Length: 355
Ligand code: AGP
Image: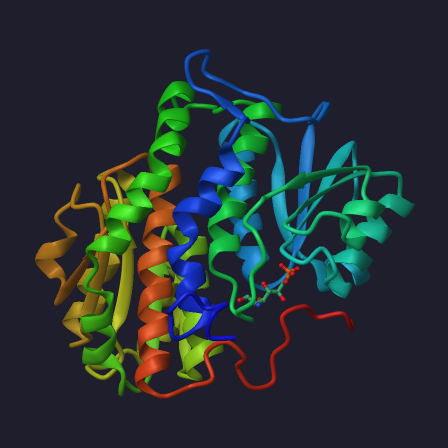
């Protein structure tokens, strides 16, 4: 097993460091930068989209739905277990199952329900020949290579990259500049490597390892990153953590914010989402909470932060991937400090094959 870990203490840490390669594999042969084109082996006419997924893959689905909406296409992400029992109306929707394993029972059940109601289905998965890939009309593989750690890391990043390819291929980039998105995707593996080579995540983890609880906030494309940051920390460290769309914190949870609850604020770019999230950062700062800003430095969020975890400057779409990797590292190092069973957390299975 030690050999399998290539010298890393845990599979999860190895898989975090494999992300540049996982992303290269995902993009390989699918992006023609000169022509500004993305080519996938999929022939889809997309009018509307419903995503179904669970856990980390649901966070990727939220991000994917945002990409389609940005291109003017109605799109929504659903928890697969809810979708299976309370199926929304399907009107010419493409129903996309996002699943690392391709075997998650809840997601399979939602896709079967959608198929039964006449929807065309697409599996976005890592596992060639998985049940989901076989049962859906089409499959888009994220090509991360095998992931051993129960906590998803490299597969989440590759899901976000693959969903960008899917949106570009089927509905375009919307208000974003297509060539800029493609260039950012091309640069992403190198940007991830630069982040991995120079990160303060371990120091931040040590500083806050004994906290009462952790909050993660972000807006727009940083919202799924906040949710994923909290899930990762919970799964492997057993600390209490919650992720929110940044504007939601003041509608209740702010009551829990104290000087012993660090707030991780994901703030990239300097647009409206960043500006408003900085407003929320000031609210928690005023309650004495330590603030860790995960940022590309384009806004002035660092002024209100106790610590900064930097991400290389890039497009808003790829910034989400990079910010999430800082949070993966924080979760890993908190769990490691606490001596947790990182690759096999208690009560959890890599693939949940029961509903
Ligand atoms: C993520 O770290 C977890 N392992 C879990 O939330 C997982 O994403 C979920 O069970 C869905 O699995 P899938 O991607 O294989 O469908």
